[in-house]
Length: 355
Image (tube, rainbow, N blue to C red; front, side):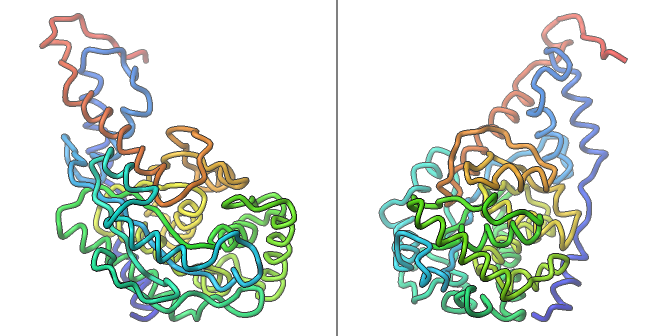
């Protein structure tokens, strides 16, 4: 796929159907409860209805898509662990267990592990093979990838969404795995939001204070070397990004293209969501922000997106763990929408909307 092909594809994305949003909201007001009593849960059902063009939407078939890629910048000592952990975690998601496994089981969601850029070959048949290249370059010294590779990684995410849509999935939670990805995500955040590197960079998976200082300097060096154009998402991704970040950008664009609700996980997932919206603003209407990451820039990214988290759990694990929990909010919201009787059925005097 060429860059022109990519932009032609995402131009096919349409806005959600506001007629269904309004119809769902009207039905909420006919149910035996205070008008607006369930707050954002009512909005959530209306938004899903607008996505699916259905007065009675559902998210019964759902998946957690975990995009994985490795980062050459780990050579600079910005992490506690090596790249081999990425492969191990991805291979074990469906074979034994990883952090996301019990979350997915509780959420009644299928895990879709996707290799878009792991630094070694994946043998497990459970992992979807969409590798663009074997890890990124070390952004302190070279580009992360070529512009063409960035396009291919984004397209990989779009194609995963198409395949899931074809299989009947209606909602997707996003996740990521890649040792070193908080470094590149902090670099992207500093670039796109014009924020000081110190403000948007955290310790990731438990760096010491000395390690954090190294990480901050590495990001500064990368930004100075590459000078990415914040108005060109492909320039940013190819110079200082990650393959799994690009794959997630594709997931958000693909979910919008194929009319699926998609849940943002934490900081890294929100970086990709923001970039997707810069490429196609209509994609935002398909997004739901699960939680606010405890990474320093977690709140900054959601504010930049103009989205509110459904909960604050001080989480910063990744892999889609926070996004998986958001399925529970959807389940409660849809259960209430379908299960609360109308004023007429309950023989209760109807509340009048305060005009």
